[in-house]
Length: 117
Image (cartoon, rainbow, N blue to C red; front, top):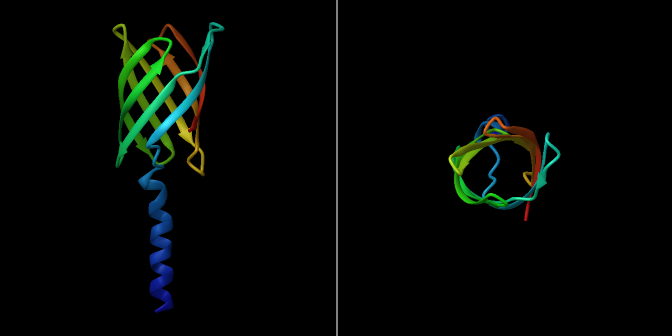
């Protein structure tokens, strides 16, 4: 019996990283671009398995976003004025912060950090 419990616990521990963090909810971010500009967009994420949908709201307006969450890796994108914006980052272990890079249509790149509200 103890062996079965230990085996089940091991399987759950090994499977957890593959399932990924659940980032569903409202997030605020700080973005610093290489050209010296910065911003503070807000995101609303809805996660279904690895699939991510939601909205971006910021100085560029509002836009629907799509992406993926695989383990601790988060990758999402959206379009503003016909330009593709892409965020790539990692969720911390508690699941309340994301840090990574952002690419504004190849015109400007930088970093971002986001926290769950």
